[in-house]
Image: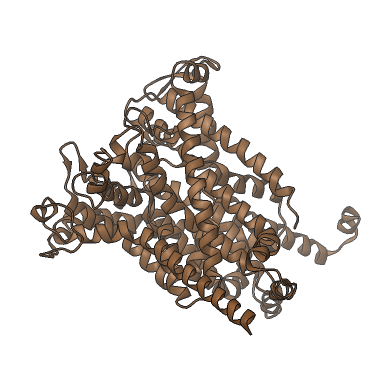
Length: 303
Length: 282
C-alpha cells in the first residue's frame, strides 16, 4: 500500500514522507538520550557486578574465572547465611512494627478529628529524614551515659542497646521502623480517601459497629494499596545500608551485619571487590525473586 | 434515649483513645528530634553534666562552629550544586522522554520503556561497588560529574513515570491548535505543553532535591576529597576514632534535616506526588 502510494504519489506525498521521517527522528531524539544514560549507569554496572562475582578480584582488576566458587565460599565459610538471616530479621522486625503502626495511625487520622493537618504533618515527618540522620538521632538518643534513657538502660544492666549483641538489632529495627511507618501511613491514607462515602454510609445503616465496618468494609477495599506499601517497605529495608552503617557498622560481633552493610565493608574496608560483588548479586537476585512473588500476589488481588 | 447516650459516651471514649494514641505517636516521632535540638544548643560541659531535656545555658556556638563552619558550608554548597546540575540534566532528559512516551510512537517503545522502568528494581547497593570501580577506571572518581551522572540516571526512570502522567493529563487539542496556527511540533511542545507541566516539574524538582540532599551511598562511594564531598557524607566525618563531639554533630544533624523538612511542611502536595513516585527506588 505504501509502496503503491510512493510510486504513484507526486511531490506532495514525498514531502509528507519526508515530514514523517523527520518527525520520527525528532521523537527518537527526545527519548533515546534518557535511555542511553540509564542503560550506561544502571545496566552496565549490573553486568559488571555479575561478571565480577564469577571471577577473582585483584583489587580493582578482574582476576581469573572461578565459576560459582565465590557464591559457594560465601555461604559455606564466608558467613553468608548469617548475613542473610540478620537481613531477614531486620526486615521482619521493621515490617512487624511499621505496618501496624502505619495502618493504625492512618485509620485514626481518617476519623473526624481536630488538628488533623498538624497531626498528619508531624506523623509523616520521619519520612523526609535521611537514613544517616535517622541513625545519628537514635544513636544519640540511646546513648548509655549521656542519653535520656541512660537511667532506664542501667536499671536493666545495659550500657547501651547498640553495644550489646543481644539488643543491637532491636535498637536498629526501632530506628528503621521510625523512618519506615510514614510510607505505610501515607499509602493507607490515600487509599482510605478512595473508599466511597455511600459504601461507608450503607455499612453504618446496616448497623455494623465500627470494628465490623473496619474488618468487612474498609480493610478489603484498601488491601491492594496496603500491599504495595508493604512490598516497598520490605524492599527498602532489605536494601538498606546507611542506617546500619551509621548506627553500628554491622557490629557488635556481627549482630547487625545485614547483607547491604557487608557489601560496603567488603568493598571499602577490606577491598575485596569479588566478595562485595558476590553479595551485591545475591541481594539483586533476592530482589528479583521477592518482586516476582509480590507481583503474583498482587495479580491475585481483586481490583 | 439511654441507647443514644450510650452511643454518645462510646463515641466520646473512642475520641479520647484516638487523641491519646495520636499524641503518643507524635511523642515517638518527636523525642529523638527534640533531644537532638536540646543537645545542639548545649556546650560540652553541659552535655557531660548528665542527661536533661531543658538546656540551662542555651548557645548557638555549635551551629556557628560546627554546622555553619567553613568545611560544612562547602559540603552544603556541593550538595546544592550537584542537586542543581542533576535537576537540569535529569528533568531535561526526562521531560522530553515523557512527552515522546505519552504522545508519540517510536521504534522499540514498549521494550525500551520496560527496560527503563525495570532499572527501578535494581537496588543501589547492588551497583554501587561496580560504579566505584568503573568511575576509577574512566577517571571520573571524586568529581562532580560522576555524582551528577549517577543521580540523574537513577532519577530518570521515576521522573519519566511521574511526568508522563502530567503530559497525559493535558488535552492534545491544545497542541493541535498550535499546529494549525503554524507552530512546528517541537515549538508546540516548548511553547504550549511545557508551561502547562509546571506542577509536574515542581514535583520532579522536589524529588530530585530531596533525593540528593538525603543520599549517603553514592556520595560516600564515589567521592573522597573535601572539595567534592556532599552534606550527608560530611556529617559522617563527625564520627572519628577519638569519639563523637555530640554538640556540633547534633547541630549539623538538625541542619541537615531542616531543608527537606521545610519543603515537606510547605509543599506537601508536590512532595507527596514527587516522593511517592520516587518511593520505589531502594
